[in-house]
Image (cartoon, rainbow, N blue to C red; front, side, top):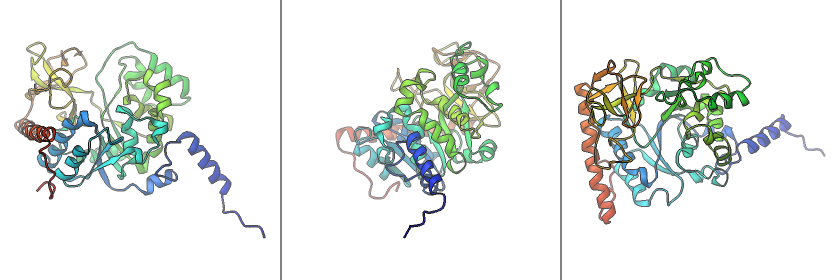
Length: 377
């Protein structure tokens, strides 16, 4: 007797075949994309942290818990046991409530991805248990409770929220030529971008990305594909700087909606701290709808690559398009504003938290640090 085939079996077989071809790294954990959606719920923050980024992440996570009084769930992703040491994983899970460390290789087949650095980020967002993901760099710090990102009108409308980078290197047409070579149609937003009008080589700054996987999963999958080993080695990273442009371009590939916060990146720091006495110099900061600092990237140090003990001077912020990139200053002086007392008090609390982190990390180095039995008590 013939066994009746389930309805739409041929269609389902085709779907699974295409999924395997496009996303061969998906299946260690998930049977299909439908599993990703069904295993994701709620809102949370995602960080990718290796041993070298620990000192940033330990401080920013404590600042979220203590300075912002936020208990939003947090998942810290690493790629294998050598990437983030056991003692540092213990630190995250015992110092803080509702923080979990996750080995990304248990969810994504690293045979295909060979994950490292920036490339981990979209895959971590995909593998997270959250439906609404605030994906944050380890060295991103917040002037406002990060949960407010989920209330942004652009995020509510489209399901994804991105931020603009600094205006950098005009006249480069490699990005536009590349997009025109493989995208037959684009959203109206593309033709207005600095990337497409050749006023900036960099469009997006991916220190914080907000994604609703229930609404924009295909866009995220496209971004992941642009960051897997073959794509980033042979195509993507030779045309754009790391993962940054892969978010909005990946969404364009799948015609998935997204929104950018309207303002371009500004600078937060001190007057004349490394540049002209009348210029604000420091780290790149992003502004909210009211033009006040929202979050910044680069950590608490004035220059994390040059000085390991020189902190930012948190006195002013400035907006403008004309940057002194060598000293990380905005040359224009008509957009300078002073940080409010509340904003200065907040950054003071971050510096105090970082002093505690230094003591803990020294104890780890000496082998005297012990995990708490009652986290955050």
